[in-house]
Amino acid sequence: MSGIKRVVLAYSGGLDTSVIIKWLIERYDCEVIAFSADIGQGSELKGLKEKAIKTGAKKIFIKDLREEFVKDFVFPMLRAGSVYEGAYLLGTSIARPLIAKAQMEIARSVRADGVAHGATGKGNDQVRFELTYYSIDPHIKVVAPWREWDMKGRADLVAYAERHGIPVPVTKAKPYSSDRNLFHISFEGGILEDPWAEPPEDMYVLTVSPEKAPDRPVYIDIGFRNGDPVSINGKKMSPAKLLAALNELGGEHGIGRVDMVESRYVGMKSRGVYETPGGTILHAARRAVESITMDRELIHLRDSLIPRYSELVYYGYWYSPERLAMQKLIDEAASGVTGTARIKLYKGNATVAGRKAARSLYHPDFATFEEDTVYNQKDAEGFIKINALRLKIKAMGDRRS
Image 1 (cartoon, rainbow, N blue to C red):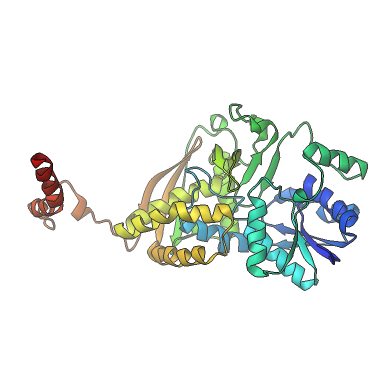
Image 2 (cartoon, rainbow, N blue to C red):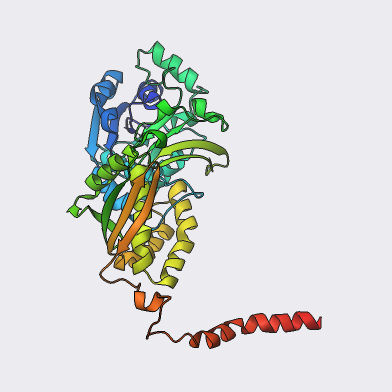
């Protein structure tokens, strides 16, 4: 890493990146430019500029990427129906490629020699950041302090911060780490490392407990156009504003909590607790509209891609050729998903209460159990016999053996 004179650091203001600013200056005698992406952290951005400069950063860039985040990252992922290991809606995973892309743009604009991040050598984020860096500039110099310094854990970082007068955001009142954006908030580490221990109720930020949610349900109508949500109760909204509104509605009704042990890309298991209220509602609503607008074989084909697509997002391959190719098929499949889903919000559940579409593939006169004039039930006999032929031949062979 010789020759590094200016580094752009992905800066959150948390313990790790606050320490890293000072460490980079000491270790490389370089200029540090801090970069923070506003992707919906809310109050966490307050005082970030002053803190970065006070800690030693030469300059800080804070870019509002909320609309881009939802429109170009969250929505394409939702069109794919992405869920990792049956529960995780990929809220942290999908944010990393956008942050890294914007960080590389800053690095290019300030003519930096390298980029740095605060991801540990045990986690997924180091992979997500660096795969994006290298997909944009294969020759970029990457500084990953957790893989270089002699500090072994958070206790060492806290001690380092105290020696250098750096404010420490990790306290006894918050014995875990969190990461927030417009799609979700995640919690891990500390007291959550015991997978048998239930998370404390006062940890949650976006949602009330289902037990304390309102005793009466609320119904909302979500309008979709070509696979993307565009309105709530008939009111059109931008992607970021729509997701923010659903987060608020879902949070009031205790929707979107997940507690799981997941498989990290580097090989170990880890426990994560997530709140994704708006995303949980959108998954239910989108599938409801898909059910009446997407052809059977097309939806089955798309669904067969969900595990692989979700892995690509989780592992950090957002800019890989395979993800981009899969996205084209997914977007084509979603091109006719236009309609409205009615969702019932009640005590932790987002339940489909209705769905409609102008170009619906559902026709009551075909599906009815009552008398109809469009379907001859006798035709099913030949259909069954043709499809049973291979099973009959196998059974005949089994009897002879």
